[in-house]
Structure formats: C-alpha cells, structure tokens
Image 1 (tube, chains in turn orange, brown):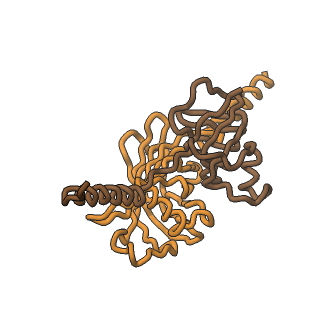
Image 2 (image 1 turned 60 degrees about the vertical axis):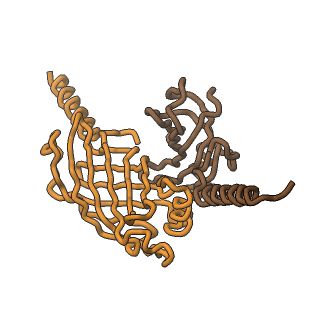
Length: 188
Length: 131
C-alpha cells in the first residue's frame, strides 16, 4: 500500500518535472526580421533575415534573440555587399543579439486574441549596446506563441558611419520589424 | 561602301545600347549563385563547429562556400541539422528521401555561428550525396 502511494507520488513528481521542463522554454529557429531605412524617391534600403533564433524562457520572462548579419538578404546584391563589408563589418561583428525581459507577463493570460506587452532589453551590434523597449503583440495559438513588434534605431547607436555620398539615400532612422513563432521545445 | 549618316547613327546607337547594358549589369550584379561556385572548404560537421568555437584552425569560413557531411539529427520542411552541430537550410524544398539518422553530404554557404542554439548555420544548400 505504502509502496503504491510512494509510486504515485513519484510518478506525479516526474510528470510535474517533465511538464514544467517542457514548457519552460519556447523556441523559434526561423524567426523573421526585416529592417528598412529607405528614403522616398531612392532605391529601397531593406533587408530580410528568415533564420533568426529566438528563445523565450517563460519561467523567468526572459527573451533572447540572435540574428546572423550574413543572413540578411537585400534585393540589390551590391547593397548587401556594402552593408556587410563597410557598414557592419560582418567578418568582425557577425551577429546582432537582443536580450530582454517582460514584466508582469503570464502565459496563462495569453489567448488567441492579441495582447500587448513591452519588452525591455538591450540590442547589441558591433559590440555597441543600445537599450530598446519594443511594444510587442503576443498571441497563443495551438501552443505556439506568436510575437510581433517593431522598434527604431539609429546607425550611430552602433557606431556605423554613413558616408556623405549616400547620406541622403538612407533614412536617419532604421525601422526594424520582427515576427517570431515560438513553440515549446526541449531539444535545441 | 560609303559611310552614310544612317550608318553612323546606327553605330552610335548600337554603342550606346552596349554601354548602357554593360553599365546596368555592372551596377546591378546578380546575387551569388552558390550552386555554381566552387567549394572552398570541405570539412566534417565537427571541424566546422570547432572552427567557430576557437578550438579549430583559425580560418574565417563565414560567407564561404563549403561542403560538409554528417548524420541528420533533426529536420523540418526546409532544413536539416547534422550531428546537432550544423543547421543546413536548403535553397529549395527539402530533397526527397531525407530522414533522421541518414548520412548526407551537402554544399552551401556558411552563414556563421549561432551562440544561442550552438550550431553553425549554412544556407542556400544543395544535397550532394546521401548514403
């Protein structure tokens, strides 16, 4: 009898550990980031990365995202080359990383209707850190957390010099949009 | 044959077309075609990972065309993971016949190292061989 009770308790504990562990981290390996710094009348300055990593730790309300700079694709390959060689210097600084926290977030509050939260965090590019606070739309559909938002940054924030000759062709502010679909994943 | 105004005009016009065309392609080159580029490094998935972790040879493989091989440990509609170390995204759809546990050799562009997932990323890949 006692043994059975013990087994039940043990089983329950294991189940709890398993469930909690399984739901702790939500992951997206194919997140999308688009940034744009186009000026009217000039060729669009826009690039897209479709393999951005995002990890959301629900137990701590912490979120981290990493985009490899070489993964951004421009329509114009020459622009892409300049972006990598002259502006970001991707050989030296191959990635952009964001780490942030959401206050008063509770996964149980989420539903298929979208809910707004502010993520406070730091974006690091070229070893320069910039605090950002994007407002993000959260949605929970079939166990997948959808997360969409945007923010603006300046090239100067990351010590990026825009040469005079192209200054009027590139917007002062860079608009960054992101779209993640995070699912519970233990194996990453 | 006498050179008339008409010949001259045609000649100048033709030259202009060539110049404009040349200029256009010079200013608007097409994207790299990884499939047609030659493989610069042939490495195993472990060697590839080590080269980014600083334990391997100090060559900058990022943005180079590489060929690598390994056993598939995960896959989805567009990509496979080799030995839990290299994530390969195919140029087009996932080639037929790929499944977990299968040994494959692929060619693609090395994008870089993802510290969060702890994998090397390769994109625009094509399947070279499966065993």
